[in-house]
Image 1: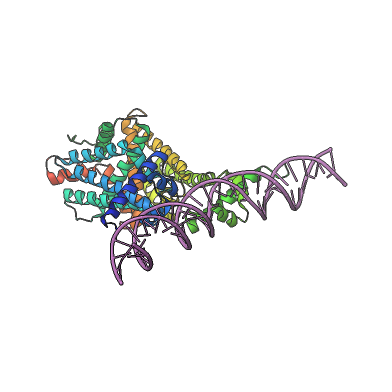
Image 2 (image 1 turned 60 degrees about the vertical axis):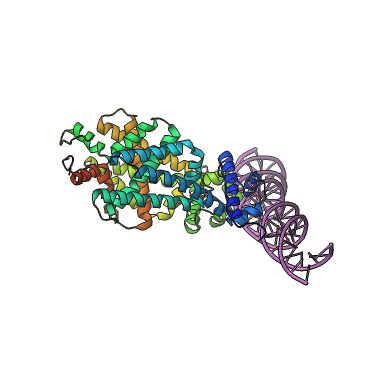
Length: 206
Length: 206
DNA sequence: TCACGATGTTACCGGCAGTAACCCCGGACC
DNA sequence: GGTCCGGGGTTACTGCCGGTAACATCGTGA
């Protein structure tokens, strides 16, 4: 081998950088030829590195989902009360998608990125499992209880969906979204309904 | 006109039926030519009726989302306590996606169905608005309060995400998923945490 | 009988994913 | 030093698909 093996990995990153740029500029419906042009090379090189378009998109998605997963893990693992940790994690998610909306759309809403969906599914699964473990330990439930797993999936979807809407409308500010979602999880609905209906009372929790 | 105008609509339905069959058989990545073949005609006819592939997919998606919206509206509007209505609606959603998983995947996860996304977005928006109104009136909030809107989007996403996961794993049975999600909305988390932490108490609500 | 318009078809264009065949250059071996 | 050889690179191709133009067909109204 005339060329060091390690260059492969570095090269791959350079190619992914180029793909990232062009996807963020022209949207996800981008041809392999244009990605190659952006990287200053030609198509067959891309195919040698990534196999096919799906492979390239999966690699691209993996980058972003891995980064997001670390951000969320850190936010969730840092100190504070449970509620503070949840608020911090939701806020971190919203901040991330707001800072790079094109990336977010590429991952979740791009029709062309069918192959990236695998990475997204994997991300959702990994984070949901993490969250389910947290919930289970918090409540003293068995690690894989139906309650913890269902709640984890539901909460992840709740934040994702609300974030999606918020990104589109920008209507309430980010802190308000975080607060409302956390309130919802912390039983604000039955509290409010009880206060209004007056059929039972419930101590308001800080 | 040699042919009655009403045939246009009927024809359209027949073509959509054919498209539906082929999509459910071969998945969403289907060529216009094969859809035309399934309908026993040729491509230009499809294009005269639907404009382009996006139009056809949008029409297909509209059919399904309209039906689902009606199902959910009915479930939500029928009588009973608030909690019963919510449980019934979540159950109706899960029953629907379970009865036609291919359709569900076509709508939410098909990469090729970029154009169908518009219909899905519209469905999510319409149902979320409905739910937001319900929440606002239930709690005596203004119709377009940040709380009601954020909660509505969040709840819709929560159910969608949990349903997605449940459809994949089938792990807890449907009633359990419905119950867990409703419990979550009804403040089961703070209740359980309080019981465990013992730092505050909270009346258990039926 | 003939013109007309709507329906349907064949045959094409442009573009894209993916690939085969070739080229070039630098080191290795004699 | 000359010759072989292998890996990075490119050009040029195939096959398929979305979309369309041009042509064929057939029933109707005058």
